[in-house]
Length: 469
Image 1 (cartoon, rainbow, N blue to C red):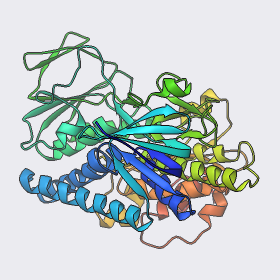
Image 2 (tube, one colour):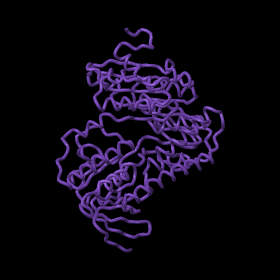
Image 3 (cartoon, rainbow, N blue to C red):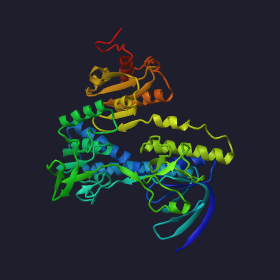
């Protein structure tokens, strides 16, 4: 094996996902000598096995549901691969254009200032840097007795390469990934059953939204078992905790993801983990002063909520590079607590049919915290554009405080993932309900539902019976 010592960088980033590659681009944009290390493919899980390929499946599912046409899996897989490859090549072009050095291989820390990259050929390359960013993402969680085998028991990785939709599919886990695949495979003609251990699908979502999605799923023939666990997988059957057995041609395990830190050599730099995660301050810096962590692998030391989402990882990257740049230039650092405001307003999209989106507090959380609030809602059936599009299933529910500031917004229906963006902006900037509602919204558009729901929360919705004048 050979070992080559290369030049020192200002920043070396481990992991080329939506956190890592964004950090590399921003660092280079700021004039920092930057190295990006990725053992697989740039874009990470999001681009290669998650957000992007699943959305090509969602698009095919929507077309199939709208036209009744049978999905051509061979053509779909080809399109999915084309989309992923095109976007991946785009990232490579950006990295090259910004003069980011990219290294393929597995990174392992040797000290607080140096790491070694092991490539597929056994070559070792040493990299030294002033600052390091750990952006290694997450990997599938496993439960005893539910280990995927890639043939009968699958993760979403294998589902995205499936050549023929199974006759029946049992999905273990009713979170985002489970619900998205339930919606997709149902549109492809598969008999789908979801088994969720908690009382509702999408446990992190507002209760009313989860109930409406469940009703919609059941109308489409998707079977749902909540407050239920899987006891055993054997002989083509799934045994549930209540004694029922369900036949399954395929089983999808979607019980969540955990941080990926294996093989990094964090013990060599004295970096302790918290339940597998790398603890960070609000500036994304770890307890080791020159080492940062971002994305799914990181968790805030102070316990502030941090979501495992691609757009959160990209935001983390911006914060980390901003902090590194200031430290290198000896500029004043940001005020304590300022960055955490961003993490109170995280949009959560779910690309089911119908779509689901959420931002801010749920009603259950407001009640638990004893927060005074008023609720407002508006249904798609009274929304002109939704009626024109024959997309009348769904509603937007909002919660505002006594000061009229928006505390949370939750939507189920067509374009819900886009509808929620305006409310997220309003929340982040501290706008009041009437500040947003009084903006002139184009007619007829889905955006009008925002103004209508906020007007309802304030007690004077115009296109709703029973509202005050």
